[in-house]
Amino acid sequence: MATSVETSSYTETSSTRLVEKFIGSHQFKITGYSIDKAKGVGYSITSATFKVGGYEWDICFYPAGDNEEANGFVSLYLDLLSKVTDVKAQFSLTILDKHGRNALLSRPSKLCSFDGGKRNSSWGYGRFIEKTKLESYLKDDDCFTIKCTVAVHKVSQLGVMDTAHFAVPPSDLHQQFASFFESGDGVDVTFKVNGQTFGAHRSILAARSPIFNAQFCGPLKEMADKIKIEGIEAPVFAALLQFVYSDSCPDIEEDNQGVTDNPRQKVILAEHLLVAADRYGLERLKLMCEKVLGQNIDITNMVSYLTLAECHNCTKLKDACLKFIARSYNS
Image 1 (cartoon, one colour):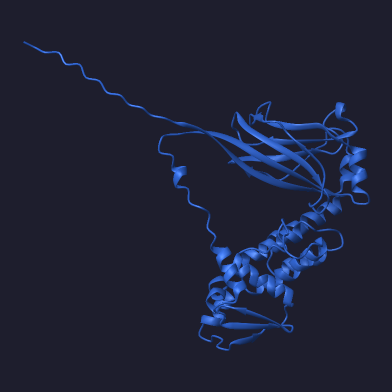
Image 2: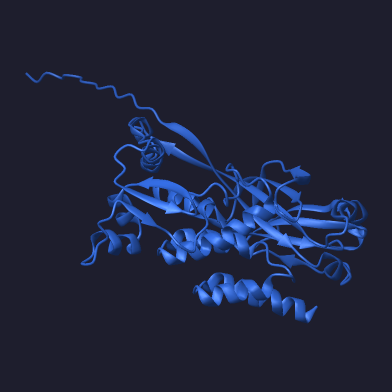
């Protein structure tokens, strides 16, 4: 006789809908505004392409408005260049002064759906600000900076075993080295620069700079505990050592949390620091200095910056100078 046996099993699972934000910003410096606005309604200028959230974007600026309805205003838009659909993003467009520091006007957006290459690939404001109002902010200057901050929203599904539980914090190695430098513990070499003394560690200097490596570890290595530095000012050498230990240089970076509150002092420091960075083979620091100088080219310094770029093999700064000279000539 056959017997029927009924069995059953029960499984319970869960998942999570996660919305992640990827935030980035881009600054677009406008020079020669009065010349561009004279070209009339519909004339536009676009920024370089930048990436946020894995997508490519640019800023489109109409100095005299994008159509007749916007006549008397400037128009400003964020464009999605990537050929993808339904990209959810919020953004803000801000007019800054020519140094990119002080906000003159800012307008945030709602959450927008961008479709790359289609009708909704561009969002912004046809009447962002009246031209007369913008020009009242500029005073005697003919330039300003547009900053666009983009927050891309991405949705993903996470199962029960969410790897976010095992998130690894970012490295603080450079912070530890910076603290080590500031404490002065274990110093084994001293530099004298224009009457000021700086203590440092041979092994760290050698690891960071090929020139220091040759000086301290090469066949003709320097054994003296005290070394005199010629041709570099003390504040410049201090900034160079700070970069060696921390991989940053607040006095010339955009957030400018260091001691150089004056934009002109920041530019002057970058000029001298570029030379020192090239002398010690610190390519990343040299590029940081190139960026500062490239953002501050004008008619009074373009020739000297081009000469500086030629002498120290600064290709990006050289390109920026040549483009500025060509634009000035064509104007």
